[in-house]
Length: 440
Image (cartoon, rainbow, N blue to C red; front, side, top):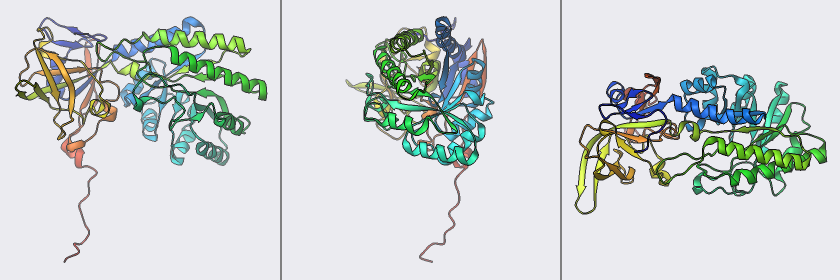
């Protein structure tokens, strides 16, 4: 069994997270339960930042918070001197409520509403990542009406396809995101913004995909974007100061995954940007990155209680848990694979192969197709690893299931970060029907 971060197996054979017995957490807070190893989050944040520090280059490491957003995680990110990437008014509002430094907030999105953009101006956040010409028109209008400045980055698609799932590839030419770098759209976007009275073009942004395991695509993207900024400086006399190369750094979900250490991606980026800048006569820009999954993905573990079990002779054995696609849609959505352990039998031999089924009324609600586990019994606590990214943030009330609680564990202590929904929460927004029946 691969252990992540601070995870250990204690003298009772129980899985511990952040120095806390996971079985005790399940008893106290109930299941399903997301448990975050906060020390692992801190260690990853430090590793990214230290690599830039060692290279002596300007940088920002922004937590891509769509992976998991909450007041508490934003506060931890602030403690670690991270910047913050938000993609909606809801995430921005959460950041403000968390007291996150506004000047370190970057606002993404391919269809920001006028109200969302106005919120960004009202809060005077650090940067808006501009995605299309409609947004440019809105920004010009708002900034002139409010007479307020705003820093912007132009998001571009560099025509690079990272080796990843089609649904999480975002840097190729045919993408809903950004200005195409190869057909003149990026040039036109730059011309429309770089001399504006209130909009300050800091530079370029790209995001080439997710769950990437090598550095080649990042290197190619860096080469193309630095060359473009150098070309604009030569043609227009305007120097862009920031290059944002996004995120997408892979993590280890199963033993088949072989990600690099965070520092390796950053080292390659820095080396390429320096080399291309020198060759182009361009001053080395600040490098910004946006890790999300690689900060919280393997820091999160979901604990479930095993309920029913079923054997289909000569086919498979099922164990069913008290969650499923309502708290982790990724296996059903695009076949994401996970590893697991029975938390109260973490030291036992792996003697059985189970399909882990969720409780949603869907045949496709299977969390793990082949889980190698000890003999399972009803009441066991199943731990599914690496659920910290896009688990809670994509959770739903499908089948009117309540969303789980979230607990943070660190240094032998634990605290509730997001409370469990109740049945009352499920119906809180519902209204009684009041239109008079037509047949009366």
